[in-house]
Length: 328
Image (tube, rainbow, N blue to C red; front, side, top):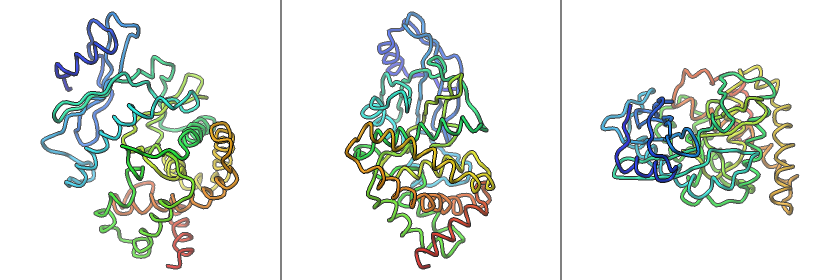
């Protein structure tokens, strides 16, 4: 477990007003050994606990899939800079319909970074799930729809220009390794179609079920982990989320239902935040981009981890349709 350097501890005590802070637990290690997320017990502060994301660059990386490349290392470094910029400049625009943890401070020194965040457990979001009920799925889709509505038209300054961790511009190694000639040929066109969509927003970029925190009623969620937030089409988040929680049969049988739920919330929230925006055109464009966004992630998986459980016949079916429409 990592210890806070003195400069970080000083910032933590100053922003919380605590007399002392002691680690209660290590919540998780960061990907490839880049640090940890920990819960701290505060003494003498208005809140009893706080979350810190303590990032320290390793001397040696250990990627679970063996992708120990300099490109991957640089992508990871930028992701932490992006996350700090997100909390500094964008997070406070989120409302209760797309709840995120309050950020108390960010601090960098040499090769270490720290983000001080609200403890969502204490704030009423103590539950984590690996499988979801229908109502829980709807809650996550509602969060995504409200998030996308809030940030429609927002320029991703100091974030990823193109959000998500799998977009083609940062994954040439995985593309080269991919054994799917037609999809490999189609990949640049798919990437271009997504990047040139008319209606752009900020995407979470890693909207898997593990990054949602549930209220005790399971009707409201908050989201964490904004390392890959950036510009793009909201369908990237929706496709990725659905694929993270449903098997291939459910993905196919529930596609229409889940998109209906998402777009109903998106249109309502968009009218609230952007009353002059044409919500019908927005829905029409993004619905057409859903299979393209799904295929884009499928392309990444085929190169990154060819045996991954998310590679299935539903994804292949969508990919074949997209490839055929592109004339390949």
